[in-house]
Each structure stands twice: as C-alpha cells, then as structure tokens.
Image (cartoon, rainbow, N blue to C red; front, side, top):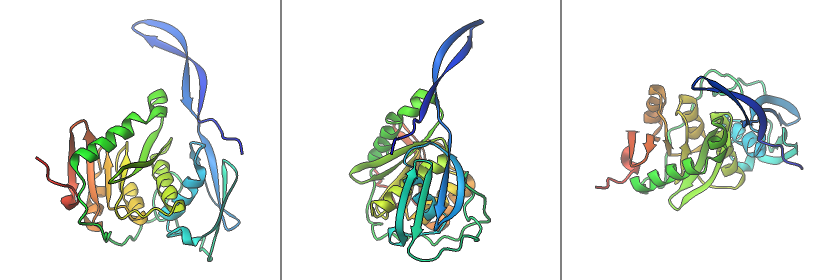
Amino acid sequence: MEALPILKERDVQLFEKGTWSNFKDQLVVEEHLQIILNGEILVSSACSPEYTRELAVGYLVSEGFITSSQDLASVKAPHPLRVEVETTKPVDLSAPRQINTCMGRGSGLQVEPIVSPNDNLLWSPAHLLQLIAELDASSLTFKKTGGVHSAALAGPQGTIVRFEDIGRHNAVDKVIGYACLQHIPLHDKCLLLSGRIASEILLKIARAGFPMIVSRSAPTYKAVDRAEELGITVVGFARGQRFNLYCHGQRIAREQ
C-alpha cells in the first residue's frame, strides 16, 4: 500500500520589513481517517496520514473500546485513511465517547488510579531532560512546518518510538496504539509530549497505564488535579536544564 505524503509544497508570499517576496513553503497535509469497528463506522477524524493503524488502535484504547491487544481479532488498513478493526468480543458502539478529543465529544471518564509494580524505579532528572531534548531534536516535520505535535514512548533505556501529527491527541493515540500492537507494558514507561498537557491527554495516558508524562509545555490545573488523584507523575516545562514537577515526584530521583 502506497504511503500518503505528510508534506506538500505551495507558493507563498512573504511580507517582511516593508517588502514582498515569493517563496515555496512546505505545509503539513490534513486528511480524514475513518475507523471502522466491527463493520460499522465509529468515527471520522482529521489527522496526519501516517501510522493510522497505531492511531486507530490507540483511539480505541483511549475510549475504552478495548483494553489490550488481546481484545483485537484483526486490524486491517486497506487504505491509509481507512482502518478496519474487529474485536474478539462485542462492543457497544452506542455508548457515548468518554474523552473529549478532536475525534469526538463525551461526558467524562472513570479511570482507576495507576498501580505500578515498578514504583521503586527512579527516573534521573538528567535522563528525563535528555529524553525531551531528543524529542525536540527529532521533530523534523515541526521544524519544517511548525504545524504538528510530537509524542514519544520512553523507558529507562531511552526513547522507544515517536510520532508526529497535526493533532496533539492523535500523536498520543499513536504512541498508545503502537504500545498495544507491539505488546509493550507501560507500567515502567513515560509519555513525552511537545505540547500542553490538558486533562483529556492526562486521561488518555491514565487509561493506557502510563505512570508519568513529561512535556516541554504547561499542564492545565485540571490535568494536575486528575493526575494527583490517579497517581500519575506530571512534569512540565522540561527544557534545557530545568523542569517543573507538579505531582507524584516519588518516581524522580533527587539529584544534586
């Protein structure tokens, strides 16, 4: 199956310091993905047209339609913008979406607190800053266009995988979907994010099972409140040699 481009070039006019000039600029591509669940259209959403299998599976985890790869009978992508998922047991498609995202609106989500068997695992501040620096350095589409968000899956040994998408929620869902499809446990991992940690993002990672999120940007008050309740470590403004720790700092080593 031929991949779709994620960038396209356009002629642009630039006004700068009182003069006009012409140049060619690269813009991010926005397409619409259809997720078909058990033969019925579940949702159609704007996204970057790559890694859509991961996006679809991550969305299903985030919304509670599935909990692990064991719930998946098959995942097929006959076209990059159509992913067909069959589950091993019936799913109630009439249930309201539980997390407000760019893919749908809902009424709230009940999530169990994170209980991690690896809460004796301490993350080095230097390691977290290195991970977020690597996320920033590898965000090539953002550097070209300024039009995408980045998210990554990381562990004690380093970054495992990263994705970019026009939607912040989509980038997170791609990480969650990848972990599900590759059978990667998340109790000793963290999610790296380039953008704001909103409460919807926090609930997504809680549903997936992440004990920690680290972002270059800010969390919202509501996100930190929910993280406090759910046992999730929140790190924001991770840039250069500094970061802010908002809650559940027991997972981060106190280095001098």
